Amino acid sequence: RVQLVESGGGSVQTGGSLRLSCAASGFPFTFSDVSMAWFRQVPGKDREGVAAIYTGGSTTSYTDSVKGRFTISQDHANNTLILQMNSLKPEDTGMYYCAASGQWYLASPLSATKYDDWGQGTQVTISS
Image 1 (cartoon, rainbow, N blue to C red):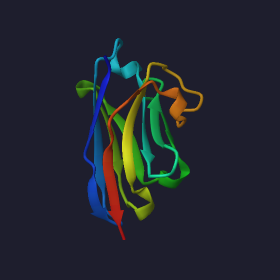
Image 2 (tube, rainbow, N blue to C red):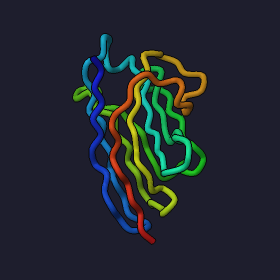
Image 3 (cartoon, rainbow, N blue to C red):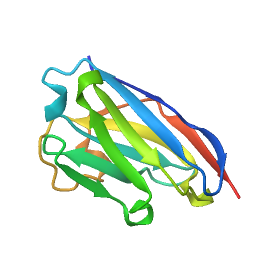
């Protein structure tokens, strides 16, 4: 059974940084073949794809609002997905979720419908 456990959320001021981690386990295949992503959600809105990594970690995709500020990566040795978030803004506030897909290639990597497994989320709050 796939398990995804997020950590690293918290409260910081505008311009600050946070590093989110997602510990993954239970995949029926090697971690490097798993496509993964970070999504965020605020109350009353749909879950938004923030960043994705797929094709064995060689391809990344970001939503426009975080390009140049966020970096997604995979630590294959520790089966961990990482999201480094810099220059944070109040609009980055939300619950951040880690997601995984057994597909090696994703045509729409920031679409929530492409992912089969989800973590419980970690809260990120940015104050102005």
